[in-house]
Every structure is written in structure tokens, then in C-alpha cells.
Length: 126
Image 1: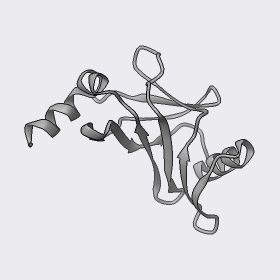
Image 2: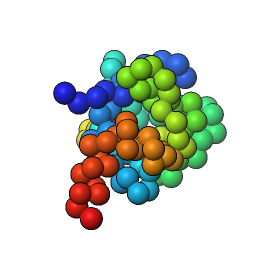
Image 3: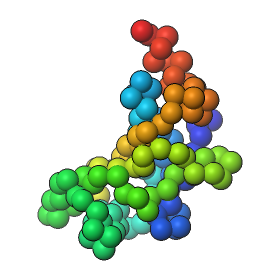
């Protein structure tokens, strides 16, 4: 069973990710976002970034595609309810094709414990 990491934006649960992928030496995990009750994730993130003056790297309204920098108000919760420590999460995606979160700044120690399967898989192939 995969671990589900809850995503909260301004204290509201918007969905989860399983962080299916990682780059352990870089301290980065990323994965698909499964949204809970969000009709348009594009509109959610675009409106949030505009309101809080967060940089948007790419924004294509017609396609409903967005790519953001780290969103400070986006929190990732571990199974024990504590917040995932690191630099934070950035979002990329489009309504018709899905969204992904990239979360950086994970310490080597945390990568070896919380994301052990990624750590072992990566370093076993070195």
C-alpha cells in the first residue's frame, strides 16, 4: 500500500499525492495529485497565485495549463500529521491532463527514512 501525503492549501485539504518519483541526491520527490472536490485545479492555483502574488512561470488560460514556483501556503502532511519539511512544493499541470507536485529541500536523513523505497532504489543502481 502506497503512502498518501495530504495536500493542504491555506489549511484546506485539496487532495493527496503518493510521491511516486524521486531524485534522492537532489532531495526532491514528485508525483501526481489526486484532487478531492476541486472542479478546476488550474483555476484554484491560478487564483491563489494571483491573490498572494506568487510567481507563475507559465500560464496558458485557453489550455488551462499552469506552472508555478514554490507555493508557500501549500503544505504537505505526513502520515503522522506533521508537515513535510523542505523548501516547499511547486505545481505543474493542466485540467485536461492532470497535475503534478514537485517538492524540494528534503534532507538526506528524511529521504532515507520517509522515502526509503526511493533511496534504496536509486542507490542500488549506482
